[in-house]
Amino acid sequence: MCSTFRVFMNQEDEEEMAQVFGSAGKGAFSMGDTRYQDLLSRIALPMLSLLLLIPLGYYLLTRGHFFWGVGVALVYVVSIKSLEEAGLKLKKRISHADTGAKSEQAFAEALQELPDDYYVFHDLEFPGFNIDHVVLGPNSA
Image (cartoon, rainbow, N blue to C red; front, side, top):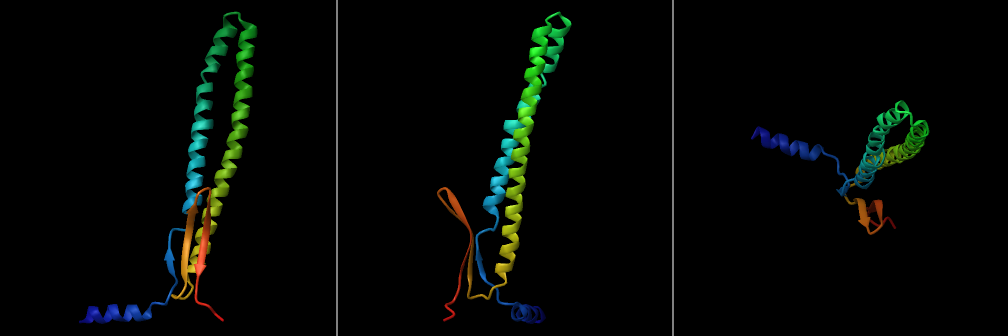
């Protein structure tokens, strides 16, 4: 009987809150994850494979093939520099996606405080775009 009374008291003490559907920031976090995978596959792995050019260049230089060795070294330096620039751009885009997702979550927490006659929908997906938040509520007129 005591536990029933406690449950009843907790239900009365709870504030009425908006009815929430969906998960805020889900799309933005997913976009960040995809960009992170791109960073690994398009930047990190090619950089690692370019490391194989170092022993090749060294071999060519020590065997008297100076011009071929310098050519390999130039290809290595230009490729690494290009991959570094692409990686920095992609890192910035990942950061923007994470910031956007965290902002969506903070806004969702504020929307949750609306009265219970409001309906809040998060991250509605459509072909090619999404809507972060939709709020439906009573007509105040």
